[in-house]
Length: 253
View 1 (cartoon, helix red, strand yellow):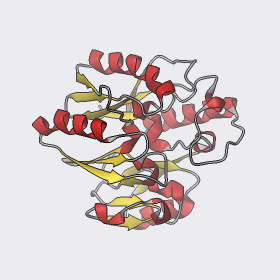
View 2 (tube, rainbow, N blue to C red; view 1 turned 120 degrees about the vertical axis):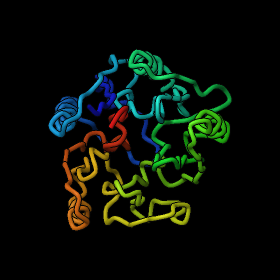
View 3 (cartoon, rainbow, N blue to C red; view 1 turned 180 degrees about the vertical axis):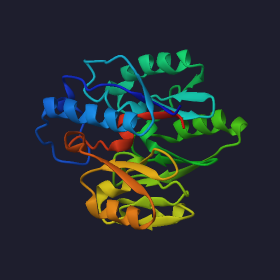
């Protein structure tokens, strides 16, 4: 059964780091309800979830994707580009190690956020320029090369993470809101979407895409392409530069 790693929001969520947006008030109670709806959507589409223990002192800890990159049976534990987020990784590492994953860690001077990593088959794109640095990318490349994966660095300057700008459809086409993509030519197949939030999808299976309610025109585009959008409202997380990919790590499936 496909499994996703999740972590519930901190009561300090509203204090989360904001880099490219103006800070807005965050309704933490609403965010908790939205998070539960996100988890329910995963369960409703055949996924099981593995919950990492909460870490209330870390406002951004709900964005569990940033703690690691999983490929095959290997979990590379991230070293966050924002120092205050580094305590988030330890419990996430314990959770995947208990599931039987081999574990390696990004070490100093490397920094890497999981949100900067987009996996498409054996090609792994890594955003460079924000939270992830050259040393972190080189360590990731060394970790995944024995598994047959090719790591490609691509620039990220306009958004927080690579997957704030682009994700990919099940057929491998990279999708993005073009004004926020630094280098469209870096991707072999690219399709523009009409909304910023439309660039973010979680692949539930070969046909279904988990995506935000804030991108209805993009959802209509995906339907025209033959996919079934599974729509969730994550407005409170979007205020903190979060998206649907940030809230989970796909372990299997």
